[in-house]
Image (cartoon, rainbow, N blue to C red; front, side, top):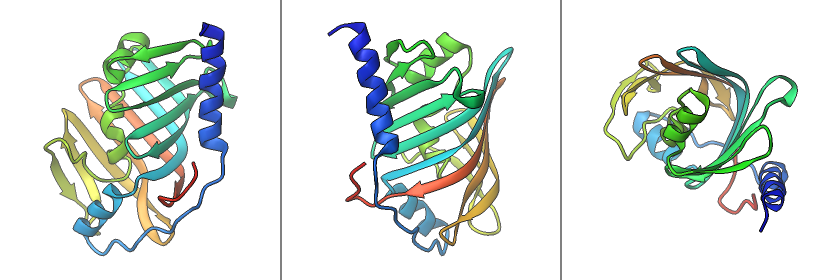
Length: 204
């Protein structure tokens, strides 16, 4: 199995995931924080599209982001203006596979540390799947501060400070619109333009 075959297969796989049909679902009503947290933890299939700004000292990245979650598996595309210099990351847990802007396929044994070593910026990719939903990572202790509407306002977890200062209506329920995660000189800001949630029977 040659490198060229790997490049084509990985790219086609990602395009299939993001392009195929799915059955959308309406979010349940979040009457309080406990209901919100439990309901969103059970949401296995979803995606969001938006913008991301990553800063880490003198290094960083600014562009578009599209993230697809299916259970423990995630697939993310980060791209510059007009889709330039796109990188694709897909994996589960700490391990991931990266397709860089040249089309090279690289295995990441520890996605967060390996991305930092490669690009010079850090992104909390393991827990971001929970934080972006506005809930803590259930596998790690957390300090949580809620706003007056029983939504996550501030979170301290894994050495990161996470703030969600704007929510927007999605199917009649409020979901994060703007998130900032900071640790030392590392900062990740995500601006979400669109949320999509899918049923368990979805074929994506």
